[in-house]
Length: 416
Image (cartoon, rainbow, N blue to C red; front, side, top):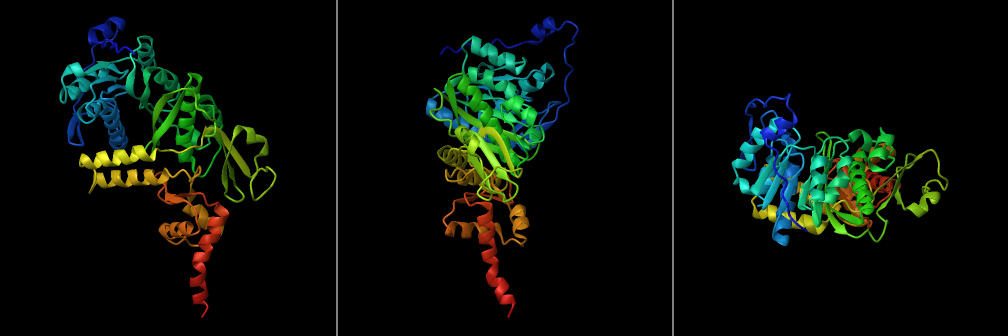
């Protein structure tokens, strides 16, 4: 594949296309520091809380470069340019295209990128992301990593981003559509991702699966398939971020692109393939009833790749990113994601409040419940999405029974 770089859009070019627009005034400087890099956010939209998502992207980019030997990045919605800066400085990208449709951000972006690298390693553009990605595809200017940090559903960028990424490359996508993932706008989720989503108690995991499912559908149309390397949820926003590896050929199986049912009566969740749609039922009721909620099609496979996360953890340790303070949070997150990668773990999680409500009991610590589930032979882990929840292949009814057993000795002792 050729590597033809787009010509950066200068102020003079922009103003020739927009004659009624004056040059943007100098923005006020607002300096921030992240991983030792000082940068100006100016008047751009910037979230300090998204630093963790940037950490994960940079670690993955560096691992890719170590394996492939080179790294070209397209940051489709760069804001102030902090992601582009970090891809250059930390992942040692060979070349970065920093794009933001708002030309008023140009001075801030140029200043930030100039602080870490010579200009031959980067360029700044001000085009709508879909146009930039489409032009890259037309020019056969493919990238190793495309980062699309969009607002809203983000589904409109999936097809053009898949067109512009190299086969074997990485696609880092985003959604902030918490209403759709919560089942409050099923028609919107159907239009955006091809998934009819109803309210479920693990809606934030559904947000990640909805996003992956949309990418799976778009990749299949193009004759590709995608593999999630990690899936990250952050409550601010909310923000759903997924890193996918794009591979040649359609997926050999639709096993992980299927439907999810949740029973309001017993709390049980199940995944159903397309050819099982006419057989959907719940163990507590042999017939489909009004208590059974079905959503999909969605991604029902693993949210993470354990090997990739382990390599990320090792690299983060080499870079001195683990340890106290900020590093402690990143280390905890990566460990949780690795635990969540157990292929035995199904879709969803059991919320502690729901367990307590269904069992009409006070819960012991989650660690105690997890140990008991392990002893019973069930797979179990904490969830990085919800701190008061566990992921397990133990059905809700059985989990309630096990928790009640934990309390029996104390109850018997209190009678004497």
